[in-house]
Image (cartoon, rainbow, N blue to C red; front, side, top):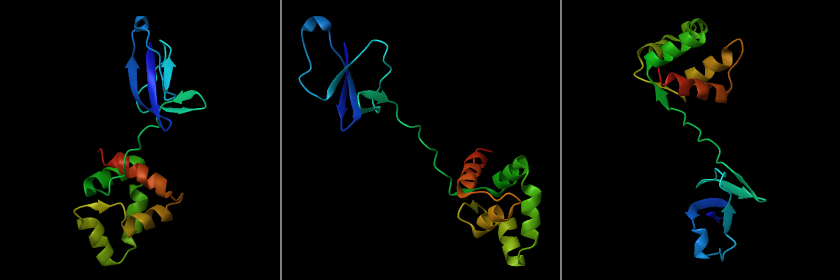
Length: 136
């Protein structure tokens, strides 16, 4: 027999008990599992139903390299539009983009570029691009 030990609605352990031992759970925090149950540590229990944890969200990189940014922009088809926007900026801002050692996610240039695209990007969309581009 398999039992899930649950604390505050979360499975904290799975125990195997020999059915011939005569042991029975003495706590309301132990739930018998059938042989086909895939319940594991970290699952939630609510109203008698076990559910797996939500997939972990990959953190957003705080910066990427200029090469990653340019490759990502090119692959996404955004490079011509961003280049056009950058060319309208004051020379100091253009130099910041051109010679930066890193492209920061919180950069005003990133925020303005995303907002000025023909179809503006949401914060979540920019976060996802940074996740993808950081792997290039």
